[in-house]
Image (cartoon, rainbow, N blue to C red):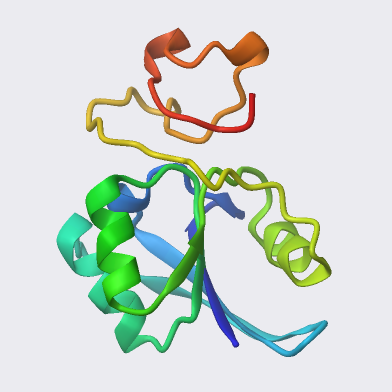
Length: 139
C-alpha cells in the first residue's frame, strides 16, 4: 500500500490544496518499508489528485481538504483521512495500528488563512470559526 501525507517540516500540512510537498510511504501490513518526500512543483488544487494517482498513492492523510479536492480524490480512486494534525510519520504508524485520530466530516472551502492558521486545528468547546478558521476537526 502507498500512503501520502501532506507534508511540511515533519508534520501533516494543514491545507491540502496549498501543500508544496507530500511524504509518500510504502507500507506493509504493519511496517513502513520506505518513504520519500516529493515536491508538487507548484501543482495546485485541481491537479493534486492526478499527481497522487501518478505516484500510485492508495490513501491520503491530510489536515483540511475542500469538497472539490475530496471529489477529485474519490474520482481518482484514492481514499483519504482528513482533519489529521501532528507528526507525519506518527500519523502513518497510527493509521496502520488502527488508532489514527481523523475527522470523517472534515471540510474546508476557504482560501484566506493567515500563515499557521490552516484547517484541521483543534478547537475547544466546539468553537469552529475562532481565530479565522471555519472548518472542522474533532470537537
